[in-house]
Amino acid sequence: MADWRPALAIVEKAYRGAVETQFFDALYSAVELHRQLGGLEVLLRGAAASYAVEAPPVPTLTIGGRIVDTLNDARHGLRALLDAGVAVWVEEPGLAALGPHTRTRLVPGVRRVAAGELAGQWSTYRMVFFL
Amino acid sequence: MATAVPRTDVLLTLMGAPHSSDLVTSCLRMAQALLERGASVQVWACGYATMLTQCSLGATKPRNLAAWGTEYPSTATLVGDLLATYPDTAYWYGCRFCGEDRGAASHIPGVRVQPPWRFADHVASAGTVVFLGVM
Image (cartoon, rainbow over all chains, first blue to last red; front, side, top):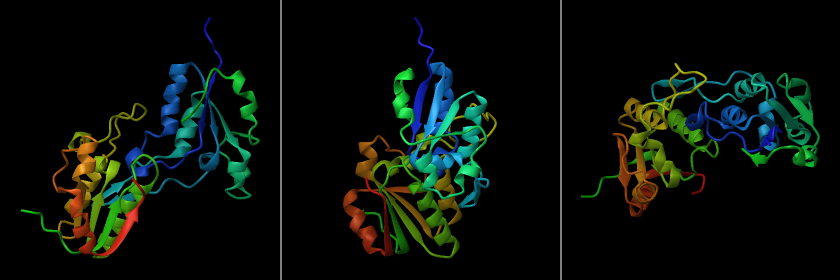
């Protein structure tokens, strides 16, 4: 019998190379995993919690004579995930580490969760993996 | 005959691997900022950083399924742009052993491959040496 439970992808390593990654970051691959695995939820924790906080547009870089305006944009990636129906959670300690005002600047649709709270629910997921 | 090593103001030794942190971005930003201010810069790429300038990367990254018409420059293109924009003050070297050990043997024009035992010559030829990351 098919297992229709969602998978849980934990993202805690962030900022893995703006110029070499550009669009193909962990959140981009999560959209495809959501499609292939038949349902995904994403938990942001650690440094990756900052992805869930609204921020100014990603700046451009000048390298040589070129303006690079295609650097990766985590908030854009999160919105794509949310639009695809992926539940996105962010752990409180990761947010708290960024300052007192982050709770009020969350990307709409992202849900806060206490430290370790989802760990107690791992058995309800089809699989759990780090991304 | 051994390749002559240019005298530069700064040597950026890029040891850390791409796709693991913003180290490569920082290296390119530092190089750009130095070059814009008239300094001369050489980059020595070691380890997985030797893969940044492979010919096989092509001019652009593979297509983005969510933005098919957008072109994303490859790291090889960005390094090539840097070298073309500052032909007299920018240099990019790759460690031969590290590159061959990782299958990165063919690099874009302008990138020079050096045997690892020449690294000391590059250190000696630079006014300041900055190590970025670990292998």
